[in-house]
Amino acid sequence: MTAAAQPNDGRSPRPAVIRRLRVAGSAGAARVRAFASWFNAVLGGQDYRRYADHLQRRHPGCEIPSEREYWRRRHADADTNPQNRCC
Image (cartoon, rainbow, N blue to C red; front, side, top):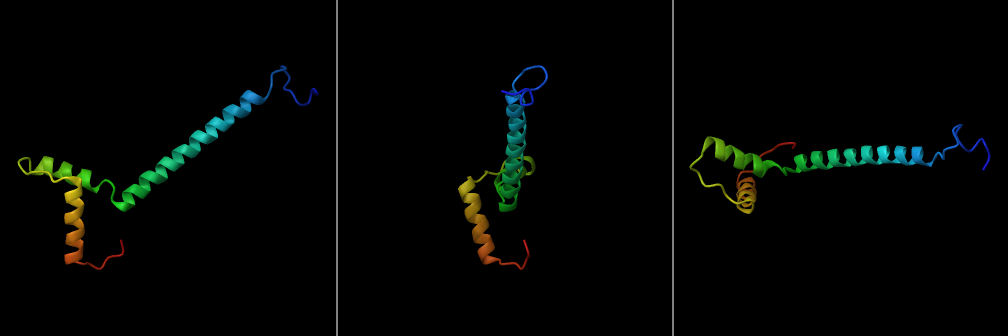
């Protein structure tokens, strides 16, 4: 190997490249997680949890429906009471 291919101290440049790839990969993974979280919020993925928390705080004696029942009621309500909205 030529002297120009190796750093001055004689070490291989490979660990630095691997370190940069790991940093880039972890930044990419963070972006994917952020996008997935945003997409989940847009689709209403946290709505049931928020509703259950509301019932526990404001209506402690009220029975909390299952997640399946919650979505059934929500979709039935949307079908019986359509509203014009952009979102």
